Structures are given as C-alpha cells and as structure tokens.
Length: 359
Image 1 (cartoon, rainbow, N blue to C red):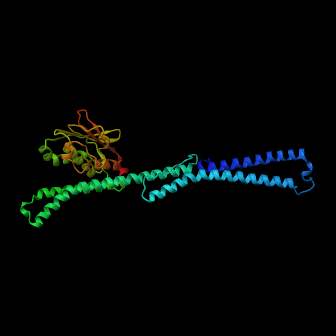
Image 2: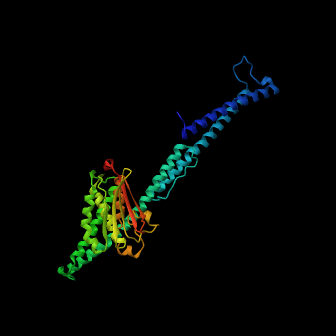
C-alpha cells in the first residue's frame, strides 16, 4: 500500500523519532561506559549483580528524560503542522457561519495531503457560496427591474379605471395584454433557467426532422419580420436528429427575437448542418455585429450591450441564457462570433444521437 499525505507524515515522523532514540541510546551508552571506565570502574555494577549502581540509575533517568523531551518536542511540532490548517478551517467556518462568505482557509504545509485537500475543498465551497450569494443579489435586482415597468403600467392603468380617471372603453387593452404577455415570457424564461441550473429540465427526446419545425416557426414569424424589414432565409438539412423539438423551436424563436431587437433590418440566415456526429444550427444577421468584449458574455442572464439601440429594444435579458441552457441540456453548447459580413453568428450544436441527454 502506498502511503501518502498525513499517513506518510505520521509514519515518517515516528520512524525518525524511533531511529533517533535508538541511536541516542547506543551512542550515549557507549560514551557513558567509556567515560566511567576512564574515571572510576567501581561506579559500575558488578556483572554478577542485577541492581544498577547510583551512577547507572542517574544515567537511565537522564536518558529517559531526554527521550521524553525529544518525543514531546517531535509530537508538538507534528501536531502544530497538522492542526494549523484545521484551525484555519475552523476559523473560516465560523466566519462563514456569521455571514462572512469571503473567508478562506490556508493549507500551510501541503505535504499533509488530507488537510490540504480539506482546505482546498472548503475554499471551493466558500467560493461557490460567495458567487451564489452575489448572483442571487444580481438576479433579484435584475428581476425586480424587469418586473417594475410592466407591473407599474398595469397597476397605474387599472387604478385609473377604479378611480374613474379612465373609462374602460378608453383603455388600450392590447397594450395591457402585451405587458401581460411579457410577464408571462419572463416567468417562463426564469422557470427554464431554474430547471436547467438544478438539472431538472425534462427533455422529450425523439428522432426529428427539424426542417418542418423550423419552417413552421418561419411561417409564424413571417408577417412580423416583414413588417420590420427582416427576411428569414432558411438553408436546412433534412438529416434527422435526436432532440426535444419543442425546446429547439424555443431556441429558434429566441435567436430570431434577439436578432429582431438588436440587428439591423435585413436578411437573417438560418442554417442547419450535420458534421462529425454533431448537429449545427446557426443564425447570422446583417450586422452591425457584436462587440468583441461582449461576445463571451452574451449567454449570461440579464447581460445586454450598452448601445442606445439595445436600450430601446431590450427584452428581458434572458433569451440567450435560455438558448444556452437548452443547448447544455441537450449535451451541446452555444457560441457567438462575428460573421464574414460583420454580422453576428450564433451557433448551437449538440450530438446527433443524443438520447442519453434526456436524463
């Protein structure tokens, strides 16, 4: 059995202590008897007598005391090495329990494998707790911000009707319905992200030809896209793929809605391809393209650009996060890059035969 970490340190320390003790007894005995023979051999006991002389008793007492001091010194030193990281963890646990999530433990001597692993695991846990707490604050603030506008509009309008400021026939119910639909989309997006983060997203995996599904989405969006100057151009593979068709439709809708909000009017090229056992779904817009600094973060919840256009057309900030979550649930990934024509290209890929992802 290979000894590593704390076991190795304890066995090594005890072995060294025993070796030093034996050497000390041999050497000190040789020196003691050599000196006594030189000074006065009468101070030694007769070979036929079993009882030591006073000088020998003193030597036995001295060597015993010295051995105990050496053992105590070695034990204290080893104990401090072992307990130092444990005390650090205990102190950090106490600080975390009192709300200081920035507390971190220190491993000190990393040759003590188990204690170093304990410290590393604690620090990893503390970092995740701190990150989760910060993300929770960010999410709460962002959700409150997203809810504030539609709730304020609905409350103000309904309060005006109740107070007699507005007559029911004067209220633009279409606008109110739009606010309610926006709230519904926000709630559904939050639910999707929550299911994905907890690993509870249920996928209904089946072999599907996505051509028909995507063409149906195109027909549903055609009138709205034409009215705003966009054209959805489809280049689709008829190769079947194992996926949750409803979730893939959700991805397509989210990508097109994102392009409609942030891209310049023009063609939206949606393609599907199969390559090396992976199914690729890409959407490229006509520009102006995404900032290089923002590209790695577009799939983060509530992450938006800083342009005036983004502010005027901002959605909930969850659409692309939902896209990435669904891709991840399929065992795939989502990526964003600048296209050849300076537009933005979103690429979603997942394994062609992906039945295992349903779990």
